[in-house]
Length: 225
Ligand code: 5RP
Image (cartoon, rainbow, N blue to C red; front, side, top):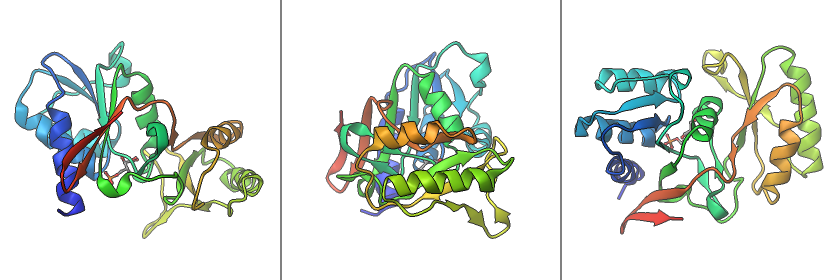
């Protein structure tokens, strides 16, 4: 089964968790897009809170009524993808540059379900470079502070994320530094060190946020708790 077929299966399984009347957090990325499509196909009376402009526009196209995080007191269920799923459902997210809105929506949610293809399930986080969202003002200085932190954790300096058209700018107007590592052995300590830097808005380590994972495998969708 291809990775995309596994993503589709996990997105469709997650759509079955949604009940009428729910406020649903809509994640970002190719796996979350399968969830949004499957949810739209169920035609339930729900409201979606998108985690990015890209997801908002897909949901709008498919006719899912939307709310913003400001409009709702809480979110019943959020379903979102991940770049890596590690021990204890620790996650790396932000490959799609949406980590800030994603984390805000996750933290406002009663239940968070992560969906992914099998390759995302890893023994140790860190093969996927850790995205760090940084305010644009003075970001080269913040980048140097991040390089100091990386050195403390024996990691190489993070790199400013670029695309064909120049620096990648997030929906919040910030930039992304990607911290490649190979292995993040102390995720909680790294998360605290990154959050302590003034120019850092947030990072893609999602620790103690996911309630369960639905992982698409060749044997079917496997639930991880
Ligand atoms: C976006 C994310 C995505 O959920 C993550 O990058 C996974 O994407 P995909 O489902 O396309 O593999 O965190 O910021």
